Image (cartoon, rainbow, N blue to C red; front, top):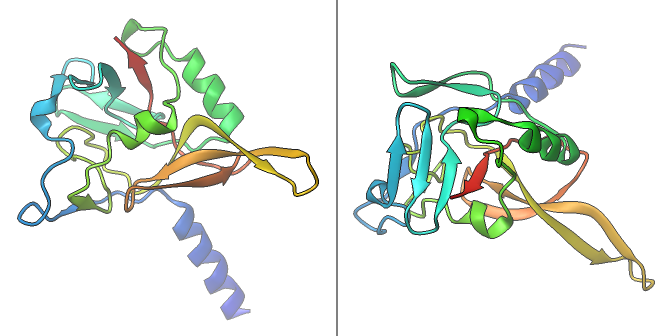
Length: 180
């Protein structure tokens, strides 16, 4: 019984969002997303990437921007893919109604290659979650019999900055984006 309780407690701990300061190797790897690449709207917690023309909510969906302390507060919320699409579409954060889930290329563009756990620029994305985030890009696989399987989506794991297939009914986090 003790082993079962330990296992259950361990699993519950693993499902909680992981907040941490990134480990960065700036003496070895050049910054892929330098802070100077972003225009920061500290009033609203929005970072605009001057290279891509994309504006990013600096907090994970579910958290709120605390402008007095330039940080994210509250609890990040995990969604299934269909819930994430609806939550992004319904968002009117900072009085903008064109927020959406990023496609896989857009989401990969914010990975900071010199950092891990999380692989993000922590000066820009201050919530620093080492978690998996949804993209809007579906994965289409063959079932081996000439049919298609469409139950997966591309996601990015910001622990190390990798992309992978994720089943649409699992729970992952959301980083809102909009094109200027």
